[in-house]
Image 1: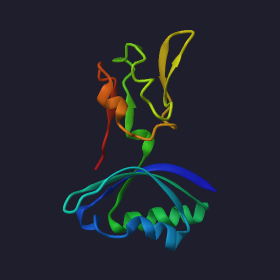
Image 2: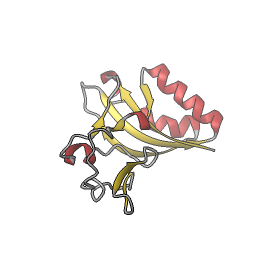
Image 3: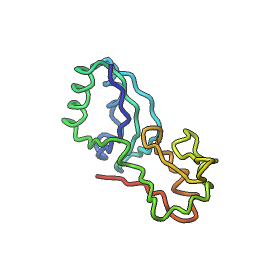
Image 4: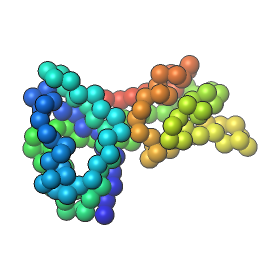
Length: 137
């Protein structure tokens, strides 16, 4: 069994097509939509957690690529710029997944990209611009 969080970039031609439902029907994959921005006549971006047997997972990913969907691992999407971070901890209280955390002994902030769902809250609220959202096309 394999579970991965990925970011999908859909060309505008696929905005109104049943792409994700085919992952379930054709490849027996489970998915959880973590974030999505898909509008007709524009590129769509979707953050998914996909789970399934290895072979089905790889076939599903290949199906997406054949359709023209660009795929990247989620961990590349949100970046913590530690050199900009002053460890104020403001972001920690807003992070819904606890991907941003604070060590109470050292009073330093840490970032666990595996827990991050790319909700973007940290990017919006950080007063020091220490978090960035990278969208790769």
